[in-house]
Amino acid sequence: MATLTSAMLQVKSRLDEYLPADLILRICAELQYHFRRRKLEPVTCIQLFLLQLLANVGLRGLVHASGVGVSAQAICRARMKLPLALFARLLEQSVPAGVPELFRGLKVYIADGMGFMIPDNPRLTGKFGKPGNQRGESHGYPAGKMLALLETGGGFFRRAILLPCKRHEFTCLARLFKSMVKASLLMGDRGLVSFTHLLLLTQNLRHGCFQLPRGMVVKNRGKGSRKLKKRLGKQDLLVEWTACRRPKWLSARQWKKLKDQTLTLRQISFRVCRKGHRTRWAWIITTLLDPKEYPAQELIELYSQRWQIEVDFCDLKRTLNLHRVSAKTIAGVHKEVLSYLLLYNLIRAVMQDAARQQKVPPDRISFTNAMLWILYAMPGSGVPKLEVNPIRKRKTQPRRVKTARHRYPALKQSRELSCVPPCVVKI
Image (cartoon, rainbow, N blue to C red; front, side, top):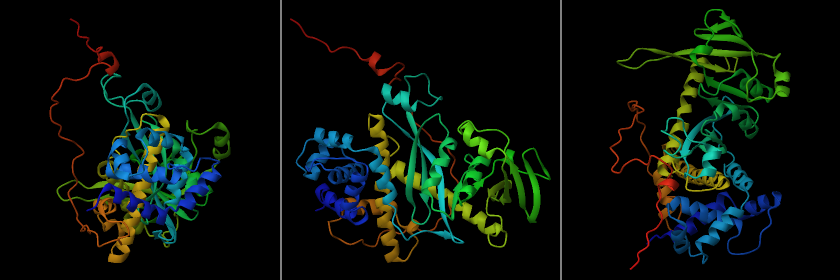
C-alpha cells in the first residue's frame, strides 16, 4: 500500500533525476550559504517542502509521514534559514534542456501574471496590500501577484517575480528578458505591450509578439507617435513607432538613451468569428517584419497558443492549491510560491516522459493524473501510461461565479479587536 513515506522516496528519486543533490549543494556554495551536516540539510529540506505541498499536509503530519525523525519546529527553522536565491536558481535549473518548441527557429516564451491570497497580518498587509474592492481594511485578505515566464516547449516555468496587488506587471516585464535565450520570441497580452519593452527586446536580439489595444492601433495613415510606413498585404501593415514620454517605471538615465529611438513594427489585423455573435476585430504587434519568412496567418495561430498559460495557472491554483499561501513572513511567501513552481516543473517533467512514451504532445497528458502518480506510486517504478486528455472545443464560459450566502455574520473590524479575553471562573 502506498503511503506518504513512499511518496517521500518517490519525490526524492524524481528530484535526484532532475535536480541532483550535487547541483543543490553547488548552488549553495556559489551563494556562500554554509550549513552543518545534519538531518535537515538543504537537499532534505527542499524534498520535505515539495512533499508537503504535494500531499497538502501540515508540518506535524509531514513529520510522521516522512519518517525524518525531527520536530515540526525544526523543519520550520531549517526552512527559514534557506536563502531565497536558492529557490530562484533551482527554478531555472529545473527546466530540462533539449525540449524547446521552435517557431521558425525561434524559441517561444509566454509572460503573464496571476494573483493569490496571503494570510492577514500587519507585515504582509503592508508589503502586498489589499485589493481596493474590499469593504474597509479589515475585510478580506492581502493579495499578491506573480509575473511568470513560461517556456512553451514543455510548459515549464523559468522565472517568477512577486509583486504587491496594486503594482502592475507591466513595470517588471523587462526583468524577465535576462532569462530568455537569444533568438527567442516573447508573447504577452495587451496589458504588457509598450514601445519601451519592444525596443529593449530588439536591442537584446530578441523578438516580441503582443496583442494590441484598440487605442494603439494604426488606422489609415496613423497619427502622433504611431504612423503607417508600408502595406505588406491584406490586413498586414508596417508601422513606425516613436517615443512620446518616459514611463514611470523607467529611470531618467535609461530613458535618455531610448527617447530618440524609432521602431519599425508589424501590425496584423484579424477577425474573431463566433456563431451567433458579431464579428470582433483584434490586432497583434510584432518585431518579426519579413512577411515571407513569418506569414501573418502562422503568427496569428501562434499567438492563439498564449492562452495555454491560463490553463497552467489553473493547474497551479486549483490542482496544487496555490490560490492561497500559508506562509506568514515575506520571505516565506516568496519561498512557498517558488516551491510551488518547482513542484509544477517536476510534474511537467513526468508528463514529458509519459508523452514521449505514448507519442502524444505533452499538454495532452493529464496534469492531475501525473501528480497523483508521483504521490501514490511505489519508489523505483517507471512512468506508466497516463491519462490522455482528448482535444475538445468548448464553449467560452462566463467569467462569473455563483456564490452562496455566508452562514455566519461578516467580520466588520480587525480580528485582534474582535477577540475577547479568556473567561475566568471563580467561586
